[in-house]
Image 1 (cartoon, helix red, strand yellow):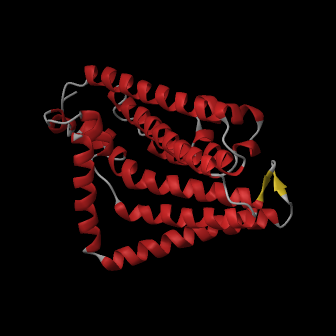
Image 2 (cartoon, rainbow, N blue to C red):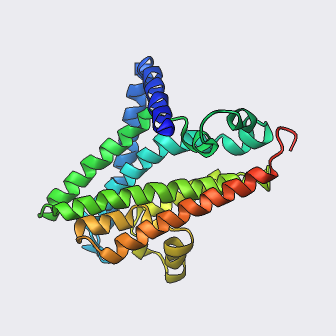
Image 3 (spheres, rainbow, N blue to C red):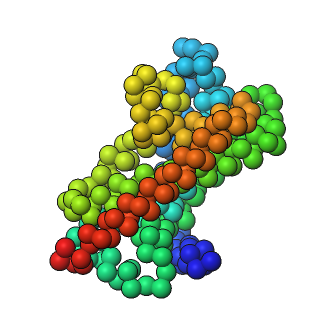
Length: 261
C-alpha cells in the first residue's frame, strides 16, 4: 500500500509540473505522432510488396505495432525515468545512500518512484492503432481474448522491468558499466513479429532475452484467441523474472558500501 501511495503521489506531482509547460506538452505530442507515423509508413511500404510477413497479415502487424506502442509509453512513463540515473548517480555518486534510509522498499524507490506522465500519449496513440488494426481485421476480439491481452500486457511490463533492473543492478559489480543503450536497442526488436528473425536469434528473444513476451505474445492472444500454454508460460516468465531481479538486487546491496564503494 505504501508503494502504491508513493507511486500515485509521484505521478500527481509530475503531472502538475508537466501542465505548467504546455508548449513543451504540445511539442512532445506532435513528436510522438511523427515517430509513430514513420513506423507505420515503414510497415505499410513492406506490405505493398506482400500480403503476409512471416505469417502476419497487415491488420495483425498494425495491432502488434499498437501493442508495442502501448508498452513503450508505459515503459517511458514509469521505468525509464528511474533506471537511467541509477548506475551513474545511484552507485558512483552514492545517491542510493539516501534511499536506503527511507521508510519504503528500496527496490521500489530505485525503479518506480519517478515518472513521466507525458509518455502516456504514446500509449494512447498505440490504442488508436490497435483499434484501426482490429477494424481492418474485420472481426471484434472475444472478451476472453481482451482479458488475455491485458494479462500479457502486465507480463510484458514485468519482464521489461526485470530486464532493465537486472542490467542496472550490474553496476554494483561494474560501476562504470552502462547497458541502457544496449537495452534500448534490444527493446526495439520487440517492435516487429519475433517470427521474422532467424532461428537462433528468435530462440534468444524467446527464452534468454524474452522480447517475444513484450508485444508479440499479447498480440497473438488478442488476434488469434487465448492460448493457455502461452498465458501460463508468460506468467511463469514474469514470476521468474521478478524473482531473479529481487535476488540480484539483494546480492548487489551486499556489495554496496556507500558513496566510496
